[in-house]
Figure 1 (cartoon, rainbow over the protein chains, first blue to last red):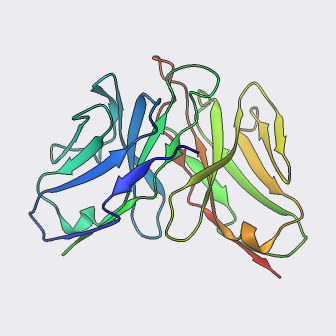
Figure 2 (cartoon, each protein chain N blue to C red):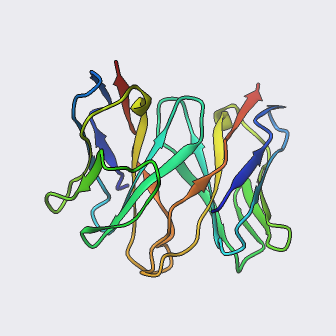
Figure 3 (cartoon, rainbow over the protein chains, first blue to last red):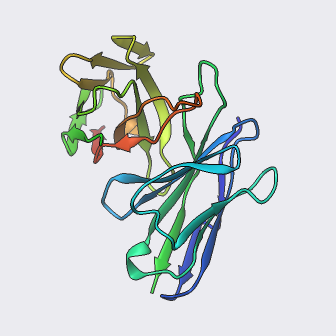
Length: 116
Length: 116
């Protein structure tokens, strides 16, 4: 069964450093999302992406964040200058383009980001 | 914006008993309500969902009910088994103007423990 994959599974970085989290969405999906989950808290929406542009972003997704689909398979989240409060589990998700099941978002296993 | 409340935060049942988790939402425009199961160290896994044109949906031992008037929806698990132990999240979203789902707004999660 197709699934969303994410790399790395765990990333440790120092405050102020740039990190890139990578995701490979399900191959026939065209909507892509990033969410994060701070330990013990709700899963929070960061950004959605469709047709090579951001379709919606939350207030968390400030100028330090960016997303990109550099090729036909990868979807990345970049944090330019990490802060301690960016420490969280970051999940990538994808959904289909239209049709009966286009609502369904499928999540990857996550990348645990630790900022020291 | 949308706000989703979920109760209880923890639930402990004996194997074979039923478990019920309840969520309320605030935005009457929301029309898609998925439930996710998250096992330790893994990403959220979609287990069942319901749309606002349906009052109830069942898939083997799990079922979801929706009351649009009261803005609440519930997950029912019957004949619980130890492998049902996990954190369960409810979520709400609308459908984007381009056809795909909008951002998911999650509840805080319910840690379900099924005791053998």
